[in-house]
Amino acid sequence: MNSHYDAIIIGAGACGLMTGVQAGYLGKRVLILEKGPQVGAKILISGGGRCNYTNLNISENNFISNNPHFFKSAFSQWTSGDTVSFFEMNGIYGKEKTLGQLFPEDKNAKDIVNMFTRLNNELEQDVVCNAIVNSIVKNENDFTVTYDLNGEEITQQTKKVIIATGGLPIPKMGATDFAFQIAKQFNIALTKTAPALVPITIGSDLRDWYASLSGISIFCRVSNNRISFDENILFTHWGLSGPAVLQISSYWIQGEKIYIDFLPDQSIGDIILKERQSNGKRTLISILSKIFPNKFLDGFGKQLPINQTVSDLSKLQLESINSLIHHFEVKPAGDKGYEKAEVMRGGIDTNELSSKTLESKKVSGLYFGGECVDVTGWLGGYNFEWAWASAFVIAQNI
Image (cartoon, rainbow, N blue to C red; front, top):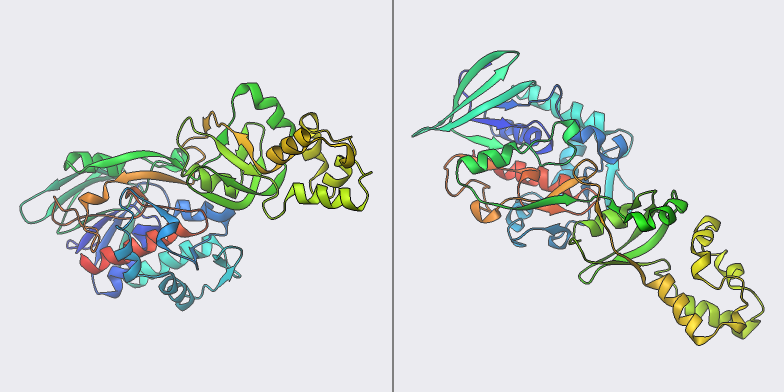
């Protein structure tokens, strides 16, 4: 390893690895310290090992932050088009799945990690795993970073330090609050954190009913009073999961209800009316069985007059059917926490950082990027895009 580095990057996840590459393109030498035994651990498990590495429909509406304008500068400097070009330049071509989600066409998450490892090696960036950072001290003109490597304490001087250690989700993979410890050390404010893109749980009084529907995946519209998502939900023995539920979880506040429309692209009222006009002798269950899985109807059977002919349905019954199908009410008991969350909401207060450089306003030479910053994307490659963009921005300015 060199005795001189332009910067030390703490964390070899998506943001840290990309920062090393982008810095290398500019002729800057960095040391990347990773406390785990391998780099890119979270990349490896993303998308079921396939890695949804960006989204073609990036916009400011796809991100949550206390400052909804903060991330605009980063995304103007590095776009999803830049991500696509970067990956193609390195032999990884994308294939759109749904809603702009881009996955490697014939490769996977392991290939992406291997790509970053190869690039950092070719650019002569030093990447050290099993390195436990003990302290970061700000001197008059530089920083002193002390870390433990296989029982040996090593001290390194550097002009710049980048915190890219991620957030709190999936602690069994090594997630820690390191970024927040550093923020506290330097009196940098944080915004409230919470699990995001996380399954929701149901109270014990309804747990058996949800368990009876466990395994059913169905296309729905899930909403609260602020936003809605049209994607699949998944019933589980403890509550709800699936893309639409994970999306709404980032906007859910403890105590509030969410609503599910099980037939977002049709009207159950119109379907029943049409059947009444043509015949009216069919039972409700014979109509619904053409729309929903049998297991779903078994679960909802006690709440619907399923054996009644549509011609005999009263106005009150029709209203009840419409409400159940199009405005099903869910009051979550909570969520599955950081153990199951994809990302974290909140983090380093964006008011503490320059939106153009991601440098701390209080501590010259200290940068924060990726998930530890109060910028949270939707499910579908958005959080990776923030990691790439913030890495690019930081690399230009160290």
